[in-house]
Length: 178
Image 1 (cartoon, rainbow, N blue to C red):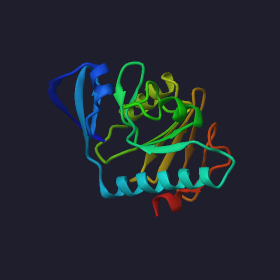
Image 2: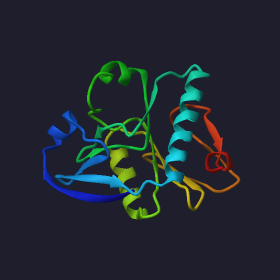
Image 3: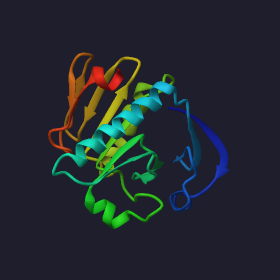
Image 4: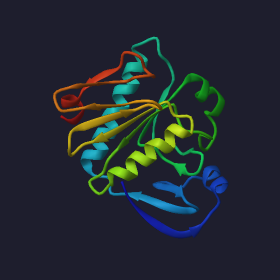
């Protein structure tokens, strides 16, 4: 997602207490997240629905959120799609933001996103309590699934699967990008 820095100084604590729509807190500054395309929005909605449907049809429970304000060790972020365990929902269901990274996150690349920035953001999530990050590249029709120790790549025609959370969840990339 393309970002534009807003010249307003706000503390991370203030951002997390009152997260502004379409904003992240990065390196002490509010940064507007923009650059979302129709394709990005459709994939975000589709993946959110797929994860939610899987949860409702399996013994797994928890919640799926989009653009959930959360804290990493150094930033205030809004992942595109997040899975929250039942314990996190119980503990933080009424909070304005999550004080850690959700355990499963999907970030969907916008056309102007830099690959290095997305990989660094994924590592930031993993360093802050996330167990699994999906980096979704709509234009390339590819997905990277990252855990603390491994990275898995999925190409067109293949089926992407979760590695640590939502055991048994799988979706064909052709369906996700279709």
